[in-house]
Length: 430
Image 1: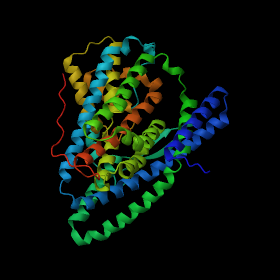
Image 2: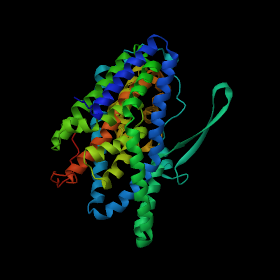
Image 3: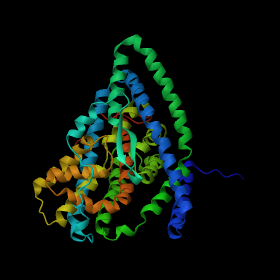
Image 4: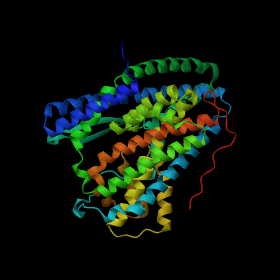
């Protein structure tokens, strides 16, 4: 009899093997194995990243054309951003409650001398800068000193700028009528090609996710958690509450099955956990939202890329809320009701303001600067940031799949689901 593992089972097996290999490489100082895990994991993420730009660009242009047949496009956009705000509000409220109850800043074993100002900091002007494309590809070049003092130049892309350019080109192609049909037809063919390439890369997920997890174990281990154990515990409790309590309740409240959602979205969630990048996970998130959760491409092509840059319940809600309270408690600085309100506002709006930038440190420094807390406090938390980032990114990716699914279900865009006539009410707090 021939047994066939499902794709999800293959990924779990791959992660289990990666975990064992990582533990072995770390405990036995197997540098060759550790280097192999690093190379395989980074190569897999690089394959995903190279597809992000063409996939996002062609998918959004194609969705512009498809939106001509949807009568409620503006309503879908409004509902999407409303649900972004609702879930962020719930997440930041959980973060504030946990930070106030557990008081991690009073139980920290980290020395004040480790407080350093981070190299990058968030600014509200970053949102405006991110909206204005520097070039049609959204590329930017940075030069930094590498090993031995040699200068290295690297290229990066701003996903928000790519979205802006894709929307502009798609709208222009639709508005000029017949003259734009050839562009839209070519774009549709290009999208089909890139999606086929994506399907090939996705087949490597069991190997790539296992290597990424093994590499994370080798590089970071768990020893650094001891000094900041109460802080890490507060963060992971908050992440767990959002993922396993809040999200299932929202799904049930909207007539959706949590079991079906997690079964479909789990490949993207676990890839986000090991890769620590919503952008690198974006192609897989798009695939599970459209193909496994049934959200139409015309809508998902908009919602998922926007969510990957602005929907961050882990990095932009739970983490900065608990971290801000940690810094205030560590330095003995009192926070008042107005400060809590500021944290909520920054968390709900700030993820959009930091779109296109990387890492939760940017969001944290934006929160600290808004509250007038010392930015050096962020340096206290950098030692365990990679370990926390794994959980934060998993929550980010889960939310990026959750909101389009709920909105599409309420609008009757998913097969066999009746439309919901009204938009969700913002929950009352207090």
